[in-house]
Image 1 (cartoon, rainbow, N blue to C red):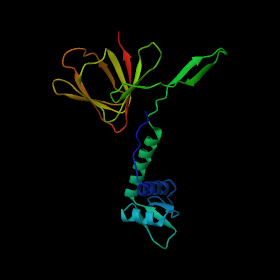
Image 2 (image 1 turned 90 degrees about the vertical axis):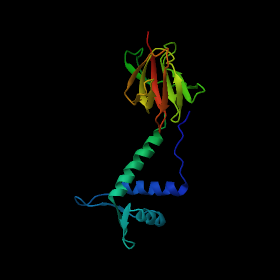
Image 3 (image 1 turned 135 degrees about the vertical axis):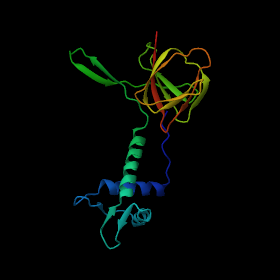
Image 4 (image 1 turned 180 degrees about the vertical axis):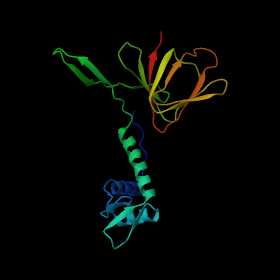
Length: 205
């Protein structure tokens, strides 16, 4: 499954990319001076950015300056577009000893299969029972039990877990959940988003 990318109109895309390119090509000549760039972009878009307070410019000058808001917005866009470009591919690297006596690395593809519940799963190593699961960002799961005793390690994204007493815990990247409520009321989950959550499920004996 490919992560759904943010949709933009052509005008919005031109707006964002112009600001990004201005930021990436700007320079500071003196300490404390605003970020300056050459106006080698569409003038209508530059006028729009100036109206929004993201840059200041003189129509006779060949250069313009990003405002503090412009720099802040450009940094936000840089993160946004960088994350979107990453997609939700999970990289698994196998380190092994070859017949030549040297260690080698190889990428291991994960054959994700839909579970029909807005999630996908792939077995990390055949026969191991260790699963890599990917949950769509808008997914929620009403009251249910753990599918078995698992250590759940979240690599990306986040999920809110609510239990019977009303308390809620948010689990994000780096968190480890020991799931073993195999009976009783169980728990409910809601993905936090905006990106899919990827977690590794390690079965416990």
